[in-house]
Length: 122
Image 1 (cartoon, one colour):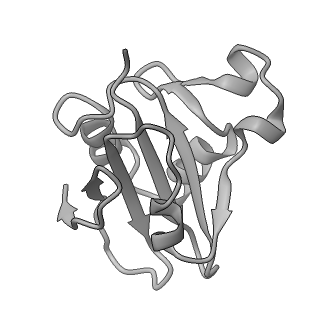
Image 2: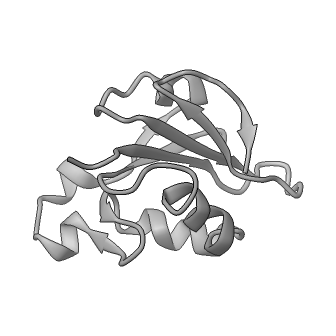
């Protein structure tokens, strides 16, 4: 069984949040959290990650649409107007990572656990 996670981001000047699902290794240390912190630190890199939709794994990028030919409508990023709405998605996730660069500030990834809005910077 995987440690499921959701990854949300508000990129650029938009008010909308995009959210994708990742099935494996959702935990912070050695998992999705560490990978996001170390490799996804620019709008361009995060946008590239989101462009493929839901993932099986972030370590070896395996987007379900390209890897298993799942329908795009089922795996494309979900769009919400607020981060709180994104936290309402229930995909069995244990962790929910978020990144907001709307104001162009130097922001870090934050993590919530079990659909809570606990804010811990990575």
